[in-house]
Amino acid sequence: MNNLITVDIGNTNVDIGYFADENLLSTAKISTQDNKSEFEIASSIKSLLNIKNEDLKTLDFIISSVVPNKTHVVAKASKIVTGKEPIILNHNFDFPISNKYHPPEDVGIDRIIDSIAAVKLYGAPSIILDIGTCLVFNAITEKKEYIGGSILPGLYMAAESLASSTALLKPVDLKIPKNIIGRNSSESIQSGIILGYVEIIKGFFKMYKEIISKNKEIKLIITGGGADLITPNLDIKFIYNEHLSLLGLKYTYELLKND
Image (cartoon, rainbow, N blue to C red):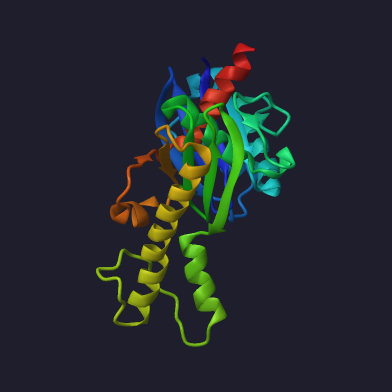
């Protein structure tokens, strides 16, 4: 496999991984919201990932994105780095899982990529939970069918909504509360969002299991930058993989190259 840059463009961050000799050597994040040019992004990618100039000639890019206007800039940056067009994934690619969403193109490509990695690493059936800008569940059947999921506001989105939609509640720093019953406004918001979401996750997981796989063990795979606020209080079995999307892009690239 050529050296590979995997890029997952989300609503908050652009997650970037550098694979060489099959190994994930380094990762980086840049903000999706910044206004950097393609030249600035190209420079950031090379410096943040510590890519040597002699490795550029064997470097490929693969990109998944849910932010179309950012895709265009990052794609230009990748061509500056490698001199080649990147692979930009869309719903027309032949993925190793069957997309049963209605219509199929409505599901975010990041959800498909996470699902590919989960099935490759942990098998099917499985439930994937991405705790990021949004809280996103994805369901994969034993037949490796992506059948859909659930989307809720993410932890920080929920906190910002409370602050912006009420007159007396102020913005708070989210941290794991010591008690379920908050003794002030900050603690009450932390309890409501963090411990409330823990219970939502447990409830959703139980309901998903009943639908997807009543009799066979089903794994819960968690990813996303907000997981550290949730997992310490999550008293059900789960697997945490912070690089699920980057690995899903790597596996997809390998499949495309082997076709």
